[in-house]
Length: 325
Image (cartoon, rainbow, N blue to C red):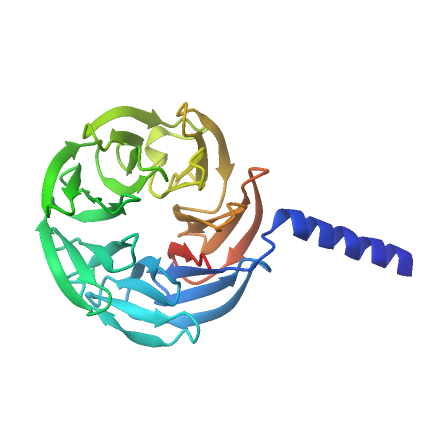
């Protein structure tokens, strides 16, 4: 009996070693209807703590040094700052009305936030906690992206169905690119060579050349047994080498795995209900997917391209951010 237990313990330890990261990071999940943040240990894949925040938390991002967590509170018209060591409130950023999504600049000095109700993209200085500038954009802006070099900021407007490209050093919009209906998210490839924009109602991902400022290709999705209208792409993430792209397909309850060079869909991974957003651990071993309707987070083994576990979180999980340190 002792020998069997020892062998079993060794096997479990070996599985853990290869399936999960060797160093623990922390994943933070915003629960939109629970008005809370679920804190997940990426080594044990368990919720360590649940922290109450303001009303309707959605977009979520970490400061450059991971010391602060920025949370968009849509119904409070502000961005709450949380100390990631103590998980205590540490102030606010003046976001403007109905902040949806946000991004931190590569140098960590600025936060860019989409203000849905005012059709604005707002830039906020992290240190002074003051608004630096605002750009009028299309109706119902949501998606925000920043190029790896910080030179270009992108905002997508849902109702206008456009991706607005902003030359940040020049402080001006240099292109308004029409994309399929209801663009929800934008993400640059790690080398900055492409910008991917997901269109929820259009059911496609547009590939934009940021130099030519034009769509070069679109990616469609076909999940066996599902109607086209069930396939609604939202969140996008890339592995750090840029070889794989992952797209959350909303009520299709799938994450699409894409070869970013050929743009071929390699696999559809079945996750929870109404998958919203995605985040990778720094070593690219695990992908976390928030499932809004089933109130859980699916953890995907990137190497094996399979779901390892479902983690119960708060009500209507929406955004996710993972520490890098």
